[in-house]
Image (cartoon, rainbow, N blue to C red; front, side):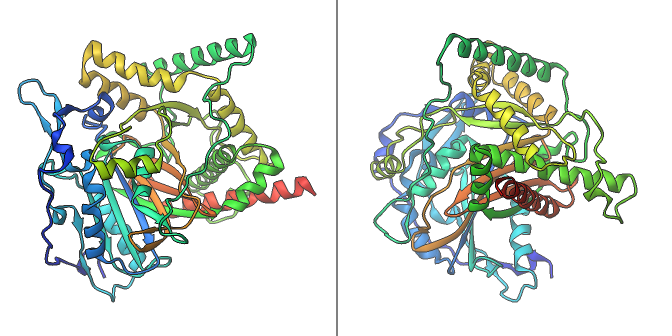
Length: 491
């Protein structure tokens, strides 16, 4: 049965806010340069996130609570209005009708493949944008039993509303710990509070050298340097095509086994697993191109061409982490607080190829990350956007970023999730899986932790990557191989 056959409209419940809210006292504010950038052609990006629940989702409960929480945040109750004379876009507070934002389709409970239905539903959302006559977000409640959830919430936000960490923190401000419904969830805190540590003259020289190299690579990428055309590289117009969203959860304990055995960080392991999974996937795709797909040779031989250039754009949050309790206070008072799109990025070179020792993937990932840690590259990319904006305008910034993103192969992002099981207005969550669509490349891999799991969320252009589920399996198998090698090393 086609997934769309299970949908019918439910009668809407009218709920609005009024102009008595404190947020209406603020004057209209222009969008920040980064927020404005997400409206440019090729950068019109949406964040889309799945929330699996242990029970059916009660729309009336969700709507009632959203009115007193999310609706009171200025960015989620404001229009983005373009000034016809100047072309500037401003935040304009407005009355909000909850039924325009919370969508509850009626679903045939006898759908044969409910997991595919949810996937297809999300893929169909990636074909569309949100009407700018209302605040740019919505929530779709899908009450259908899937493999690991009784109901699924699908959040969709335009990226101009905020960066990934801001939106994750805001979402968590709408949740409580399942074990203590009065307590807010907590996020893992890194022991390294400083982005760059200067300990000696040599460390200063190292930072300067790495930054100069990064700047040169950035400039070359803008001008002419492109990644190799591989089965993962998207073609022109990829940002306008629908996406397929696939998630693969693995054990956080397994990742920690590798971390402890190799004395590296969790990020080192995750990037190493990603590098190994992509290599495994590419090796199979190239073996199919060479006509050996009916054998197991791709498990033992390296079919990937030598000297492939494959890079990931890895995003950094440049703002001090927003506290969850601060956003709770902001929603109560109707004020903005610390918010926005303050993100930079670095270009991560990923080494593709078969490794006889799976631990080499983690070692290579650690070497790349360590180099980026002693570089000003994220700050440079952020301030380049600001400088080009002031000198040449938003159109020039949009073209610059589009060239960088299109000339690389994938987006890579890592946002920490809650350490405890959370409940969203009385609905205990089984998983949280954020991703994006609208970006000018064929693949995004987003990593999110939740309790004792780490989830790889894949956003794939199916024209380029027709089998994203196999890529998810490759990531899982790669972790198992790396873990086995790590345990053998310890024994």
